Image 1: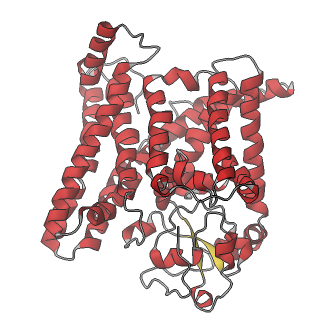
Image 2: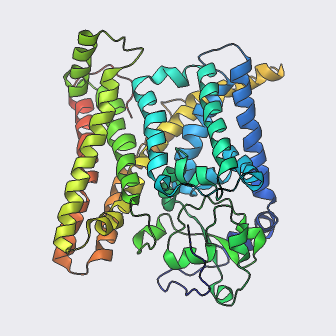
Image 3: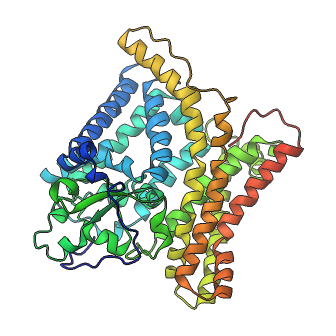
Amino acid sequence: MDKIIATSKSNPSAQPITLKSELTAWPVLGWLLRKGYLMTGLRSFSLIVFAIAIGSGLYFQDARVGLATLVLWGIFWPLLTAVLTPTLGNVFCGICPHGFIGKQLSKIGLQRSFPKKLRGIWGGILMIVVGYWIIAYAIPSFLSSSTRNSALYFTLFTGLAFIIFFIYKDMAWCKHLCPLGRVLSTHGKVGILQIQTEQSDCTRCKSFDCVKACSYHLSPFNFEKRNNMGSCTLCMDCLPACSSVKLVAKPPGAALTRPINNQNRYEMWVFVIILGVAGVGIQFLHGLQHTPLKPYLPWVLLGDLLHDFISINPETFNIGRFLALVMGLGITLLVSIWGYQKAARLLDMPWTKTANTLAVGLAPLAIIGLIPHAVTGFTTRTAHTLSQEISTLLNVNWQIEPLASRGDTWFTYLNWLPYIAMLWTLWLIWQRSGVLTTNSQRRMKVFYYASVPAFTYMVIFAIKLMAMMFMSSSVSHVH
């Protein structure tokens, strides 16, 4: 929780704000933001779509494809989260139906303080690892191929979220337990949208209207000084409350090149775990496993052996896929710990400070690498099938063709994004290394050690490419 500080100084290294980059100064958009109409409208629309998706999954007969699976797994996840977060920032949380209803429940609820031992990143990380990633890896068809299961799954999380909102204050579910909350707020640092304030006004302020308007009990007037928006969801409730609060557009990842103050002491684990699961693990499962190397992969061999030994149907629980998750995460954790420990000894600094500073550079690698998969799936399958489902529901005859096919030229450019993410990550790690030391030789060594997690991903990516180029295969595509 941020402390309210009466005075604040402008960050001298912050980039200047122009009228063009200050979105709240735009004639129509600024008025919609200041009045709160834009965000309220987006949240209302998101809530309606979310409710219809869950309702259809619970009401209609279970099917492999339907509104529930198309909306929940094709639009909300991964399209909105994988595309919006690394571009605009953490705006998905700003329009999330859970947070929209949760703010009202929190106002009329018990207003208890969330237990200190459960605060921080670990609740949300545990929820997403156990509650989603293990299921997605080991039982992939359980959720995304069943409208009933998908609806029940999101109903369960919605009920749990609403209970937490009602009992505890300061949006405890979003800040400490939401499976996506900590992930998106961390990786949202890559996005262009930031909340800033007119610092000259803040030094004289005695009312702190921006703090009072924030349901998360954050201090927007400290964001720029700290170069850290913390667990801000970009709900933008502070904009109507104070005219000195501004929504600005910065270059992508601008905050990641400068020192970040008041970081959560365990925040580095979020970056490393996401890279391990959504980066290295995905390359194991949807990269190497879709090449001619598949029969020789250790998780495949061990998985087949264990299935024969303990007689578990792979459709019930695929041990090989689960092992790909464990190995991807385990390898990433090991190389990251080793690299950051070596860098900390070289700098003679605490390991936590070193790792927190350097791990931020990993932000683009995993999440931007997911964009091609999300966009490809939506344009080639989801959008077309969703329009058919809506036309059936409304009893109209819509004939909408798929938005794209895999042979389209523009997909070639889309597939360059992982390479851009790799180069961007290395550049950010170099910048982060400069935050810790100005000695050129020491900085180069720190850069090398801090880049070991990224190098690990790149090596696996290169092996996948070589297997596709030099080994015969009938696989149509890989990720």
